[in-house]
Image 1: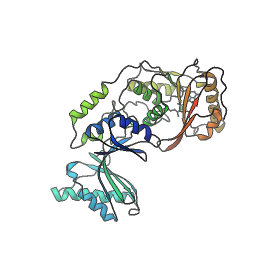
Image 2: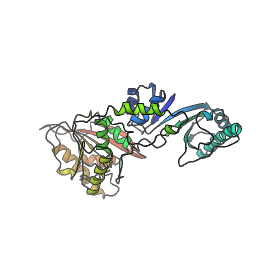
Image 3: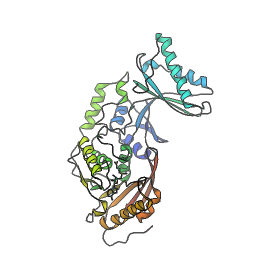
Amino acid sequence: MKLVAKTLYGLEKVLGEEIIKMGASEVETGNRAILFKGDKSLLYRVNYCARTALSVLMTISEFRIRSKEDLYNGGSKIEWDRYMNVDDTFSIAPVVNSIYFSHTGYAGLILKDAIADYFRKKTGKRPSVNTEDPALLINLHISNDLVTISIDSSVIPLFKRGYRQEQGAAPLNEVLAAGILLISGWNASATLTDPMCGSGTIPIEAGLIACKVPPGKFRKFFGFQRWKDFDDELFEKIKREADSKIEVSPVKIYGSDISEKAVQQAKSNIAGAGLSDVVSIEMSDFKYLKAENDSRFLFLNPPYGQRLQPDEIDTLYSMIGTSLKHNFPGATAWLITSNKECLKNIGLKPAAKYTLFNGALECVLVKYEMYEGTKKHKKL
Ligand SMILES: C[S@@+](CC[C@H](N)C(=O)[O-])C[C@H]1O[C@@H](n2cnc3c(N)ncnc32)[C@H](O)[C@@H]1O
């Protein structure tokens, strides 16, 4: 099968590595996506186990067009009854960038007609569209003259892990949090601290990685469970295999936040993920936290500044720099923010920089190395 795992900008490399480890072949990097070949077990496994995939699509047809009619004709040639029954509902998600269509929705309507006419000719009945809760979610991608039609095997995006009980004011996307951890090279043996943990996304994703808990463990539903060829026994086997690797990790994972509400939210989300014995949360202002010389990893996702005055946000970022320098010798810090301007207030030279997206928001991820003992910090 030709499969496509979609991800956030900047996470293609880590997702590719995850998918290669799961046994995929012919792995290629696309735009916010990894293209690969695999069978049904791999499709189920990537949905259940990949930490940095947003969804997994199975390509069912690819063809070129020279007119709108070609889309109808190409869509009509697909044997739709391999994928759905006439009584099943469907929905089309179109992504169109083509001279043949000025309206994305119109391309979707043409494909919808092709599917409806296919069933009408065969059965005398037309399947219904249900955009809220379709049995089959069809992805229509048109790039210039190339049409790719796929079925979404996830339907509910995979960042919706199912452990979150409380939302938080500005939570990181779970896939992004996992991606940052994988990019950082944290190997689940060094102590990890998120001193501005908000609703706890980074410590939770870290706990799941450390204990080898599959990210899909808390989900109730994957799109492929409604497919005509769904193999319940195979899916149960994949889950059993993945779950059998879960182990208690001795690593220390800490989260803290200045806000009492955030601390409560983090605690309840941590309980939702079954990690209360692995992740400790406390209420604290970052400026009061300290660690002896150690090689811990800090992950910081400070406020971006929308709700703060410019001088408050400058003070906050310079406090972060000072605290990192003086209170965490020997540590490696990773900081993600959409406020690039504020980074200069940190006053440390980044050892690495990446552009990532938190949903639609462009962010920068920077790495700072704190030297142990008396070594001088390099200034920007
Ligand atoms: C962008 S949010 C973090 C969101 C978090 N990553 C999540 O997924 O929910 C920033 C957090 O920094 C906290 N914060 C702001 N100033 C702080 C300080 N001086 N010390 C500790 N936490 C602070 C805020 O209370 C807020 O929860």
